[in-house]
Figure (cartoon, rainbow, N blue to C red):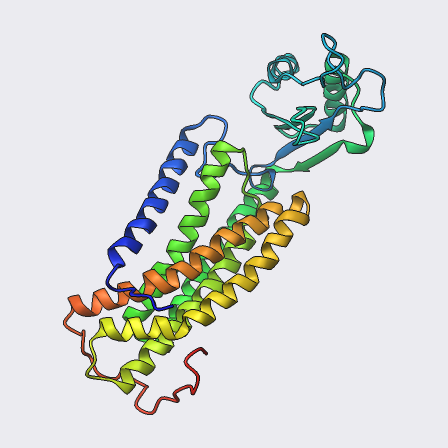
Length: 341
């Protein structure tokens, strides 16, 4: 397989812009939603508060069947839960009705995120819900509480870690390559992070998916993985320039991408296979962490091949450096014997 990256660069850029714009629109909508008020739906880790999850206890007689039609499962009505919370002074809480069995869509699980509650308040809330809805399974009760101060600290630390990693990678690439290489590698990194955040913003609106502290870890991992592929392609570009200094940059970039294409695809596929296994079988805690990595790694492979390389070629054409000769520091390059490093 041989790709003509430069000839179709408008197509690659259009695809990226369309996905990023969709994500940005979703972020704006999320920001204006009174129940989110942030670009992403934040988890308890960031905003603080108490999250309670209850599910009906089906070992109790008639607890999980409809009173009108015993052949059908009892479904919890979100309006009923909302009314009960309002009576308790918790009207601004976020409520989700989930399925115990997604195949049946029984809607017998309540997930409530509210302000920080003391133990006495939690017990009272549970008793009120049980008196109107039905008995809850004590083994399935889940309660998480994070104070607002800790939530802000986690958010600040996460942002700081992202900024430091961006700055560190940019400085390293500036010394490793030339400034334009480093700049477009940074653009590719930013592209990957924006796509991941944008898709999670859409998922937050559509499916109620929240961004937690593991999401920050996923973004940091994506940044590290994505730049790895870009560095390999840029290294190859420098080597081809050193071998053929009179060749046009478009041809050089196409050759470099195709010579590293097999390596990029194989590396990404092997990583994705592992991540899909975690997504499918790793449980709820790791499910969306794995999903963020799947999105980010896929975007990273795409941007390394189609965005970082084509932008570099475009820039060199625009600045009259389409035939620039050897880059500094590559007068005696060590050329790999194998095209796929």
